Length: 279
Image (cartoon, rainbow, N blue to C red; front, side, top):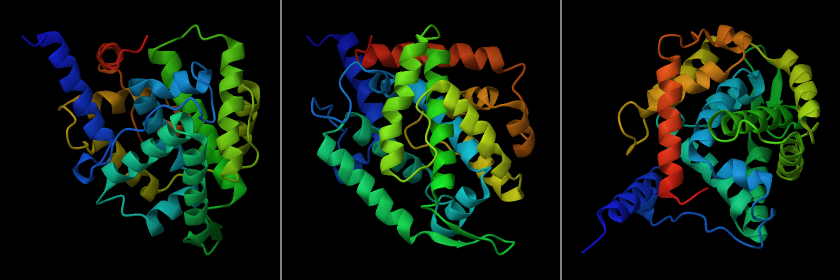
């Protein structure tokens, strides 16, 4: 007789994999490799393995990225995000999975593909300023807010007592991917990340378009996601933003829902770690 608990676990794993992989086209999860860019049980693989930390951190990072006018315009001009937000998020998640856990050859192929795409993406801002997706400074902002946000999600939901040395190692590891994508400057410690964040913040601008993208990110529910999960993750991501960023995006800090959202994400995270047999 099948074990009902094990059947439930496998069903949950299949549902989650369906959210992050295009199973209709036969796409399968990225198999972890012993010949990846990063060794098993190192900080980047621990941080990027936690689904809830990555989802809340990923939403936070995307909201901050859209405050950069060059990054935003690239999305507006060269993406069908309004019609396929889930597809865009799924492709981003797969890139992170391949470059973190996949064989190093597959990781470098994925990086090369992104570099070729970025080389073709460019245009002008509404004020006539030219932009290019492969601009090192723009890529630096995209990277630093991703790294800070993923790590913030992990610290908030999994391991608030992560040693400082491991956090610095996380930045050093993630820097390998960022440099291969052409970002500059790239942090290798928490202090460097904070300094670069402060420096690049001067490039940001509030705009109706950034607020539109923020609302789409926070309200669209990927197919297969249980009702309420997107709202819960979004509330957590918004609560993790700096006050000034919430102001620029005209987002309210969750108050009455803040504690329930955090408790719910903690519970979901614990359940998913059980389902995927993570410590």
